[in-house]
Image (tube, rainbow, N blue to C red; front, side, top):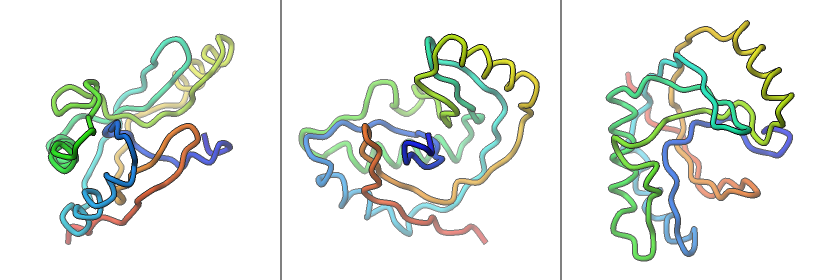
Length: 146
């Protein structure tokens, strides 16, 4: 992923818009309104045939983050959130590898089986990116919770 200039990130929404520029004001309006939050990565999974990911527990912070993002974009004309990323109907995840062939999937499974253990993290930034190829459109630090 990093070789393709895709920074480490957790996917929390997939928004389809005719033009990404219509999403920028909504994202910028969230700046200063959302704080950092905890995540506990407890498992790995796969999207067959070629993706591995780490997934956190869907806690209150992540659920509220999902709701806030959806509310921010729901009234923008010609914009929709994928049905797979609606509040209470999505899988927060960090992609570990994608477009893997069968042998790479077997190797990745073996490595994850031997080395993965649950860990805690912190959501510290929020961003909006275009995909294929990846391009950050908006990215900002979240308010620290002190």
